Image (cartoon, rainbow, N blue to C red; front, side, top):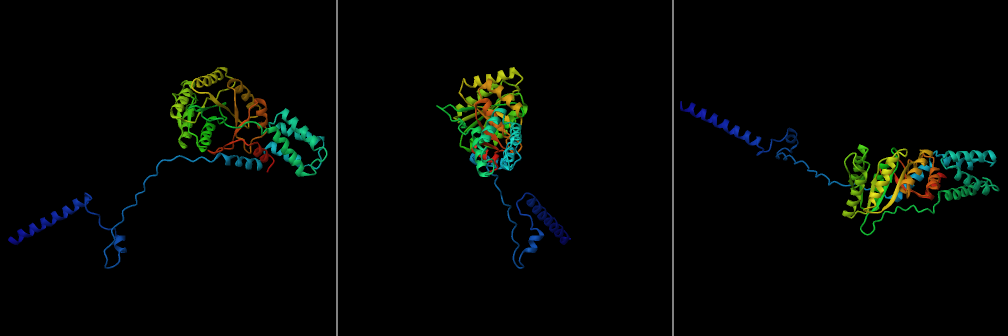
Length: 374
């Protein structure tokens, strides 16, 4: 019977050893056995290679987008204009393509220019100048005719206007840009794109979301700012826009920012109360810092309706410059001349499309070259 006793003890001992091994493995103190593939791949007579630890990929540090340099942006507009069916470009191309310049040709040319939103006055000036200079040679010499077109069109666009964005801080106070315009012109988007332009130039920018009436406006503006590392000052929905604008400028001054850009609600020109409020926003800002630029955002495709809006805004806030959005292949182009004549202020920036960097300083020579297909 002794042998039976010792047999039972041996079985129990073996069971305890096996159980201990299982517990240790469950606790992670022993590595799991090699996979079958690892055993089969080992060289005969050599131990199987221990499984590799997985590569640890450290998450990248959060960064900001690098905006495109402002200098290269307008070149894209020039290419678009040159390859587009722009009304103004088509009128000039048609004039160069005829064999003889008769009264009917000039009448058609004049009508097309007016349709391009050039305006009656500038159209008459351009037509009379071209008729006078091309009276002798006509278009028999295409190079000469094109040079005359370029000279007269450039004169209308007026390269002598100061298109500089005056947004340099003075005496520790940030420059302030107030951006105005009706809903639907791309105003808030323009503010975000302008911030990218300024960041690309090395400026420290603060955004003010003073459009407190449109729920998505502040969120939209904050998203634009986050992409290039720009802080956005917001207020409660439906709050006082002037208060938000003032806080943004105050924060810009306290943090040593170079520029504060204030987005405003899309004022309908028919609502006098809202227009008066826009004047209030400007006056409140000026308690803290002078407003360096008042930029009016206009949709280049709206024609005469856009011009009516422009005149109303100019009366309320003393517009210093115009931003024309959607000035690409679908726009008529002539509105550049008309809006400058109507307001007496230059087009300073143009929107080229929907891309984040599709906002560029306006270049008169490049614009004319694009219109002429060069």
